Length: 288
Image 1 (cartoon, rainbow, N blue to C red):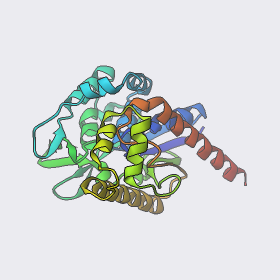
Image 2: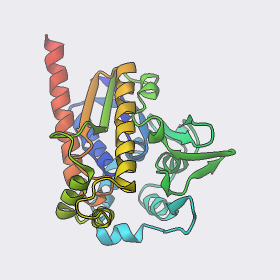
Image 3: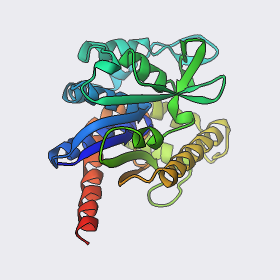
Image 4: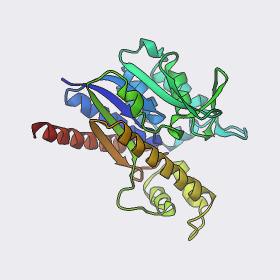
């Protein structure tokens, strides 16, 4: 049995693929000794580190359009749209809070200090404080104020925290990146949104698609969206070059949308399939 240091990327709802990836690792007999996660990777990794991934997945399977709306506590603040308290409170009912240092496996969550532009790595203290800071998508979630810092999503600087994973326990460094290069070429953002609107009940994606005028592909939203995609992909690719993982599971950014939280079964199944292929490839390399 090989011990694994697991690294889980940011990626919104695409991060539900981390669930399937973890399930496949366990099914194949690997022992996850440590987890470094960013944003959604910090959330899924935290649920696993707490020993409650199955309960978290069951809860996610109950998330539909109505439940998504009920978890959105809108704010009138000028620096964020959603307070983010309601979703954390709901999660705590499923998985109680615990101190990171009391978890059965080593765990780190990465956030970003908005003021000084540096990474902040949570290694102790409240699990949910770490998760809440790591998932604080700028302009969407209310930033977390802690020790004089203003903390936002770790993906701003480090969407795939391989540096942290490389320093943690485990013989095999395994990374799951759910913001990989586009699948099937580079479709326009408008086309992606329209396709997701048609196939998904995800309310945020439907609203975003409907707001974009027909035939107008360049606007404030598409420019911002494109910049974020490129920065995330390039930062993740750079980390892969600097801290080469033994196993890399790369899931294209456009396979699912960032807000499609009502598709946990399909997204986690993709993560399981991708991890299976990656581990099969590792076995072939070992035999050569």
